[in-house]
Amino acid sequence: MDNLIKVLLIDDSQSDADLLRAHLEEIKGLNYELDWVTAFDEGLERALENQHDLYLVDYTLGAKTGVELIRAALNAGCQKPMVLYSGREDVNLGVTAISQGAADYLVKDHVNSFTLEKTVRNIMERERILQENVRTQMRLFESQRLESLGLMAGGIAHDFNNILGIILANVEMAKCVADESEIMNMHLTGIHAATERASELIGKMLAYSGKSSTTLKSLDLIALTKDTFEFARVSIPRRIQLEFVMSKLRPMVVGDPLQMRQVILNLLHNAADAVNESGRVLITTEVKYYGENSEEALTFLPILAGGYYVRIAVEDNGVGIAQDLWYKIFDPFYTTKAKGRGLGLAAVMGIVKAHRGGVKVKSVVNQGTTIELVLPIEREPVPEVQPTVAKESKANGPEQKSAVPGNSDQGKQKWRVLVVDDESEFLRVLTFILENHGYEVVPAPSFDEAWSLWQEHRSTLNAALIDMTLVDKSGFDLYEKIRQQNLKLPVIFMSGYNESEEILPLVGRGEVQFLRKPFARQNLFEAMSRALKGITQPK
Image (tube, rainbow, N blue to C red; front, top):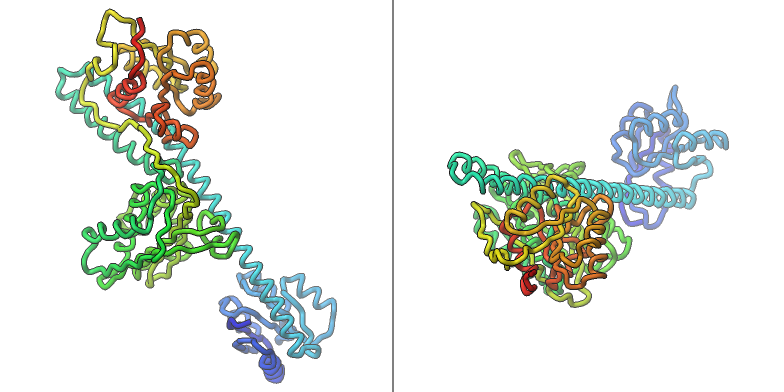
């Protein structure tokens, strides 16, 4: 028992205080500090300060009793164990004291160094376990709360992307018929630009939810952190002292280099914003092992699985953050900055969670903040995956129909496409765009109707454009059923989310295309062109 234990005795007897001190001094290995007060009111006041680890309370305290003090202190917020320390040998009194919240009951005449040591050790161990359980429950609650926020953010992002897709598609079709009106085109261009800005914000919400698009590869995270640190130097005021400590070990992790660079830059700039004129920002990198359910593993959000991790800590000596705000800083749109806004640290949390890592905050007001992030070390080499994803671009006017193979030839039959989406307005405008560009569309608003139409028209369909999230079943389920009957049918997935884990390998191998809503017409036509490339034009 090497840690200092602070004990407060509330007793009006000098001899009892001297005797207790003597017993404590006889306990080998006990590092203690004994304080003593004699009055009920002063004892209650000191107990409510929660500055001691253990309170020994005499039963007789003038007109009031120690049991009353224990009850009053615990009800008013005392969070430390309290023991009734009485000269009365009365079992009923002990039962009463414990029923009022006392941790134990000691009879003074029976107390010696042995019984006192046993009581103190037992109580402190129970208190340690209780506090650890409370901390674990709080961390689990916080993980569940962030997970719920992530699910909500992901759902909102998906629905917003669907709405933005409808807006963008209608704007682009309106521009096709408004070429003669300069003012109309100006307004439509403004709507188009606002839609793209909204889409960027939704992308950050997807990052928070852990559903952002990732390009995973074997990554030297420590080297990337060093490069990002050097890059950030030019954008951080010279008055701030920057330091970097590089680990001698350089294991690989599986990660998205662009997203991890974004995370490190975000933490660096936040740290720089927090420091004063003589501020200091330190980045430390190391390889560290965290045991399964160990105390350290439990301090991260989400709680870490056991294993080796690359640890990156960004430390500043700035203004600090109050402890009750530590985990709020990862909530969407929460900030401690006067002019802060956006999803900065929320996106950091989402990206790290998506990489199977964790984040931890330590801070002291007016002393500084340390934010740690860890990513698991790669156990097996992971091949680099390069998804073929259509990049969003502005469409300032109608595209040439010759961009679609075969449709410029008026003597041939049109390409026939099954389009599946349960958003009726989006299905309508997407059908209009494709038909206006020379395709023949078979629209389906649900899984069941899509499957029925596929059975009816499968011999004449040349491609399928499928929304990933349908009301009745997923678009991937439809894809698998279609693939059982036609392995070569070109398929393009659409979603308000980014690529899901189930389709990412297919996109990486080029077996399917993917479009994240909202997408411009040009991206749609380019995806259709790639999907139909090499297929014989229908006669």
